[in-house]
Length: 294
Image 1: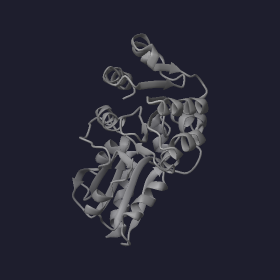
Image 2: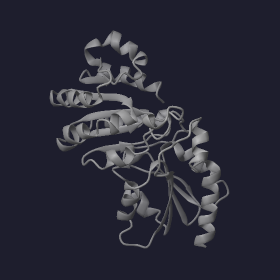
Image 3: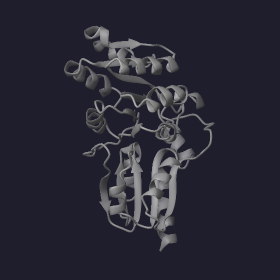
């Protein structure tokens, strides 16, 4: 997914000369063709993330379409105030593409973990939030949104799903309709969820757009018992689920990153097991929920 990103930008910049790429000293080599062919449309700002966002705001106000790229904790947590005031408050067009969300950089410790990106960016009015689970999904969602005059956050994942889904911005996809337990799964957790629910009577909605949240699909397939599965801290998405219930009774469980620091190192799959969000835990928790709910 990350390797595809510069290739998409290189093609789009031919059609849209107003595109301007700002890099936070991340993935610079992969953008070498753009530096060579379009040197007036790209700058490596370096390790100055707050300044990079403010510069992007000026670029946006000047009629260009900024694309800002660095890893999630540096983009969302380090430059949160600038995202809030420069882009959210002024509702400027801009695209913010991260890598390393949640704990993709599993061996680099807490400074490079960012499971809070979804909550933070979704709490800023006017921002859109997208978590594609496959390179093809990113390509489609990026092309559908980068010209829409809204600040948009897209998290790229280092561990994409093996299969893509025909996604559309702002819409959830029905993956399975086979039971009265509704699972809402987000982005790169879809593959584990499908494997965990083989032969289980569940309905699965796949979300790649979290803001705006697709309430229409949720209401259409609503059941009292709901499980949210995603590689982020829970919180703001549960609030969206509750708002979509129209006062109906609901039981929600979340299989998401626990609200704690991660003091372990290793491969991402090892950390998922440690955090109890791997496919085996997902399967067991779904079975327990089915038994409990009758």
